[in-house]
Image (cartoon, rainbow, N blue to C red; front, side, top):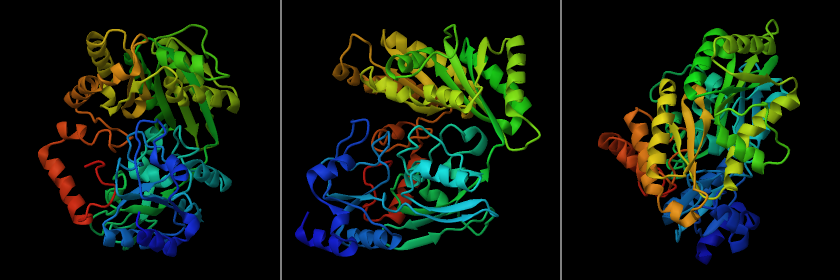
Length: 469
């Protein structure tokens, strides 16, 4: 980086907020999976929207690329720069203030660098619920959640991040600030500009703050771990619970036996909830906001009906918060446990809920025919059609040889997803990983429309280049 650019950045945000030493920059230049490694001229850490705007304006003038970054928990390489890039990493971790909480409107206005778990706790402190929840919630930031339209485990009841957002504040690629921090649930005054930035992975601007919805704290909740023989049987139980429990059905997670084996093998202080192993499991949660209904009673009653009707084979219901957390930890630690099993190729797909069982059968059959001894690690949010259909390398194969098969493995999975009217990225985004892959599945018209937006809003191509589109 030239002395001139460094001096200008230091002038804008101070010497301690401009990092150029290789060792200090390293955590910001590598993704947490160790798959993507990039280069940057500097890592800059502004503490206000005004500082972000000044940095972006400087970069627009000098044609320096910008990689917005929150907790750097991206699974697709969106939050790290490219190799040999002339870019800066714009890390928003210092912008971590809750600006306002409006209890009558059930909203909170927050800065992009707030860690998700911090926002969950803030909502709880005000006897409210912020329902976005995912495994990385202790380190991911709301800015990153917005930029990837994060999903998580409660989408079934509360929706993706997109549905939880009322307003945004965004620094545009020329340094202007769009102040769209409206807390309205109805605003029909033209194009809904905020939706363009949600899920754009920092390619159209830098989200600096947001107005997020809050909800009543559940008065009761109940968690169960259920053994089933197949995804088809799981769908039968899902339909029963959806019909009888309606919006109380908060979580419905599908987990294969191999996932559970990995967790039990590698994660300390875990145990098998059921005495007999099953090929598939469900992690189910009901939550109730009214005092007149007890979620535990309802869930136990529904599971009793399911056992009688052969919609389930065995089940255990948590009797305490600690037991519920232990059951959820089995689900949340699957990805961490899979890391100990060597190289893996991950697929974050979605298909219609009615097609989950067919997809699992067809994709498993095709992969096992093409790659004998491959290990399929399937789990995810069955209640909203999002499955993490991951594969681990055969035990006898090394990581390098396995990764050499990545294109063919992806092709088998993604072609089937496309044939079933699904998506090859349900909640993780495209980033670097799927930027080229998506061109095989989106129509030329749709890609042209996306490129037109990118050109119009970021004419110099400085916002997170070579990501998404």
